[in-house]
Each structure stands twice: as C-alpha cells, then as structure tokens.
Image 1: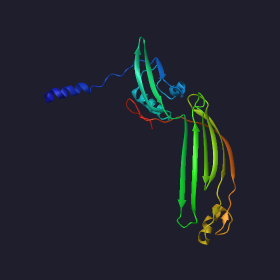
Image 2: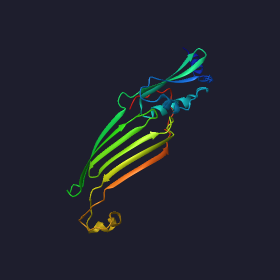
Image 3: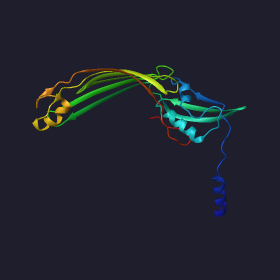
Image 4: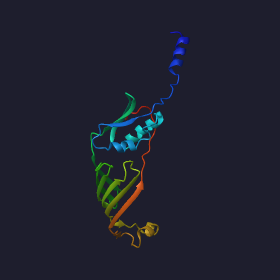
Length: 229
C-alpha cells in the first residue's frame, strides 16, 4: 500500500461518528440475587426516554462498580422490535455478603516500659433488606479494649439519605506518666498525676444515631469491564 493510500485509509478510520440520538426505552439489570436492581438503576444518571451519552454511561458503570458489591460491570445495547434496551450486567461478588476481618498491632520502645499489643476483629453483614441495610461489629483487645456496633439503614433505593444508630464501649488503658522532664508538657493532656506513676482512665459508653446524605463518586472510562477487587 502506498503512503498516499495508507493516509487516505487512516483519514476514513478516524472520521468522527455521528452521535446516537435514539432514546433508551428500558434499562434492564440482569442476574442479581442479593443486590436490589432498583438500587443499581438509582445509581445511574442514564435515564429511560433519553439518548445515550457515552461519557455519562461510562461514569454510571464506574459508579455501580464503586459500590463494592460487584466483581465486574458491563453493558450491552439491545435493539428489539420498536425499542432499545440498555442491559447492564453487574456480576455480584462470589464472596460475601458477609465479611470478616482480623488484625494485630504491636508497639515497643525497646526499653520494656512501653510495649503494647492489640488484637482486632470486625464482622459486616450487607444487604439485610431491599434498601441495602448493613450491620457492622468490631471488637478490639489489648492496649485499648473496645466493642462497637452500627446498623446502617438507607431510607430510599437511591441511598441519598440514611440513619445509622450505633453503640460502643471502650476501656482505655492506664496511661504511664513520663519523667519530670516531660511531665509538664503532658500534664494538660493527662490531668493531675505524679511522674513515674500510672493514671487510670475511665471506661466509656457511647450511643448515637447519625442521619446523613450519601452519593457515591465516579470516574469516567471507556466501555467498562472492571475486574473484581
């Protein structure tokens, strides 16, 4: 192929295509077992009765994947007789919907006077109802003992508003007060005490109900098929 013919071919290949102005007649969410399809549609800005905006649709796919419920997300445009369907294939994670995590922390000043350890575990249940409620629990033992629990309840399928009652109990450790050279600097933080002694800290109970607004962020990309993470 001559250079002139190749250049002409490249010009034909790079000609911008006209935008697709055909309206979407249906958004179809396929093969979901746990996640509410209405919640997936609510996370999309692409809407029935409007044509496809590629940048908006790519953002929608990123936003759906960003919820953390899916291994990967993809879509297909299906032209049925007299109608166009946007079919979203969001593959739910094969693990879950309950998640457990464990951790351990160690700290030492290598003098034997300030060595601590912490063991922690958390357990989270997701999609307890059609609105996507979740229940989080955490325990921690060692230097700082703590037990906490929170129930997160969206108030609509969009997840724009939620309530989150929670309760926690903590029993902080006795705090070793420093020697005379540091006592003055830390006295206002620790309260009255004597250098070289231990100051006990009172155990704390806490209960609260949070009310807020949430909307997941998104970034754009080309036709999205994101591997699970």
